[in-house]
Length: 342
Ligand code: AHR
Image 1: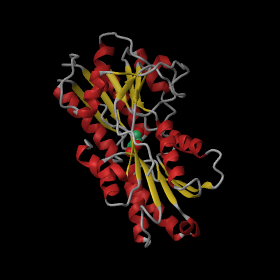
Image 2: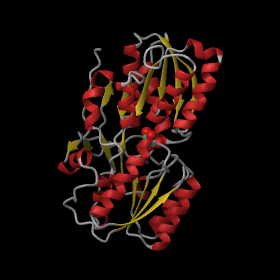
Image 3: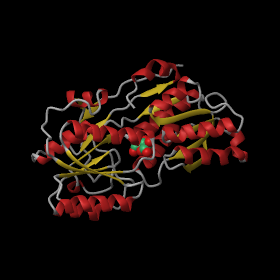
Image 4: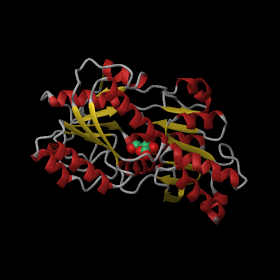
């Protein structure tokens, strides 16, 4: 396999802006920081240099839809505990109205800083205006929100377009630019679903024999991924498939089960590529059932709490902090599996 594998995951801090979080378009060569690197290797375990003791942080989480999300939540909670942060945590169960309610409640409680990972991209302006009016800075993490720059202090998260491109490039090479692909998309309206679909299509541009013949949401869950794939395997399109691209590992793992139940071999009869890089995905690669995963690092706890401590002190942060992700396929899975932190 000629795939160039970047088995690297470090935080690249800079002001590189991706369309959607307002209108600024500054780009700057990202710089590595010791804090950022520590976050990927020892999530939540080491207290950072910045004093965050007593900081009141409200965090509105998307939900618990995937292994990635569980790791993200654990990273935030562990880091908060290690550093004496007074964390108020809300699980929105993948519903925007629940996240909005949680943010309003954090405002009413007078927290120092609010952080949240927006379940969908749009519809945040009114509640963020309320936070601004109350003088509470907002940190956006993981997923982009389509709001003006003045409504948030910083946005920390991966480049989802790039992740989709990496998956597409890998798959195009694997299939020699020819084949039928089924796409399992993430939550409709969410930044990772929008951007990964976009990046994947960019990678396929000009490759006329490489076709997306099916696309449907699996809502980032294993159960939905399986359900959608089961129905697909029973349809006439199912027998024409060469590959599945899932917007996250959980949907890919559900799809793998459905492919097996339909009497085909995932990993060889049907190539499977996904995004996240969770432990179960590495195991599936070792077992020969998943072919490739693009990493999306969920260990954001330290970066979020460092940013909250800085913003509380009145520091201005870069509008965009990009997390660099790697790509892993079966050729490195067994070696990497013991090193996985999530
Ligand atoms: O926003 C990150 C995405 O959300 C992860 O890729 C997915 O697993 C999660 O549900």
